[in-house]
Image 1: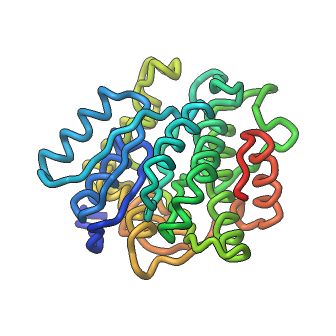
Image 2: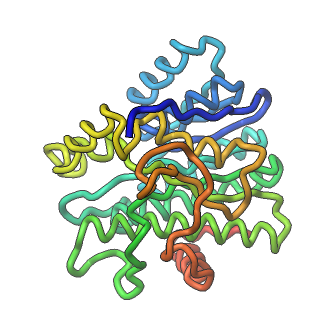
Length: 312
């Protein structure tokens, strides 16, 4: 497929507050940039302040009037998530957009969060679950749209209910699939509960397809000393406009889900080429692991127990 320009229109977001996790690089940086360019006041919770400052400088270099707020937060620590959330609660400003985008992918050996959860499940799902729960009052006030970023990995796989923390027979990709299936199930259950309990929140799911982001790069902090085996091929395909996307196009499904007036609660957005690895963004059918509402309700209850965060 020849390279084509895939673009969407982001509406005027002046006066609206957006929180974007993972905004210091990759797809998250692209999302934050587009939201800031549209006039949103973008809050960037980052684990590494120096990396966050560099990202903010990049955004301001192209958009001098960008309204950006950097805050420290580590999704792999429930205490850090709580502290960040309390800062926003104390500020009292309504949140209109929350993009749960950050994530970690396939450490070669099992690692755990500060709270002893398997790193991918604890960061990608439980961290965002706790963040959304803590911020619920501000999300309700802002009649917010919450967009949670799943992955093409969630096309298959399952939640390992008998060993959620992968203490036996750790498999990096299996644990990653579980974490991203969990992200999708949470987002869809949030949509159902918002409707049932009249929270006024719109919740949907997006996925970026495949792109050469830092998820696949060398990550010494994850004990990955070199890029994953497939990254070189993904870079080549991306540079030639074949099958997969770029970091710019990979951001478009989340931007569509988070900002389009036509985006729906409980819907799923991703790239539209065959295989959903690249192409223009649009609504798509839920993959099989995301369709079971009973699985989503079970996950919600377990997540409340593990994090101690409820959505009362």
